[in-house]
Image 1 (cartoon, rainbow, N blue to C red):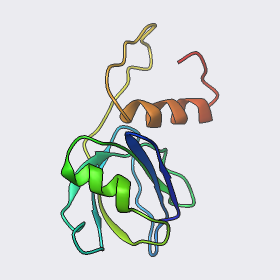
Image 2: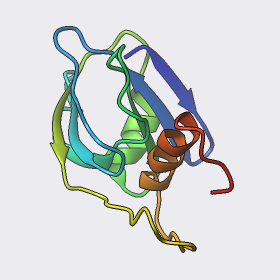
Image 3: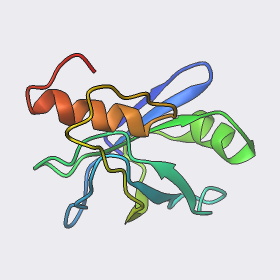
Image 4: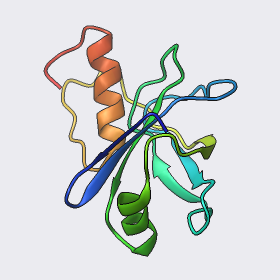
Length: 122
């Protein structure tokens, strides 16, 4: 865990690989499990970052239940986690003139990828 940015009702977790990086596409999700006692249960979260050369994986996690409340309260920089990913897919039609997005973190990852490719106005 290289970064933890808690908010009043969510947390932004930033993780870098200890071994090999995970290759993923925007909109995919992974099962996150912390290696700390009481936080080992795997839960699925959408990956909220674009796949980069440094292997960083970000999650934006809202306070929705006991497990996510515990993540927000107890996760600290330096903690270790396991990520089982990638799962799922999100495909955009390149020729679409207009789009309506409804959802959560997956939209952040897709937008970051598009901005990195010089597309604006999303």
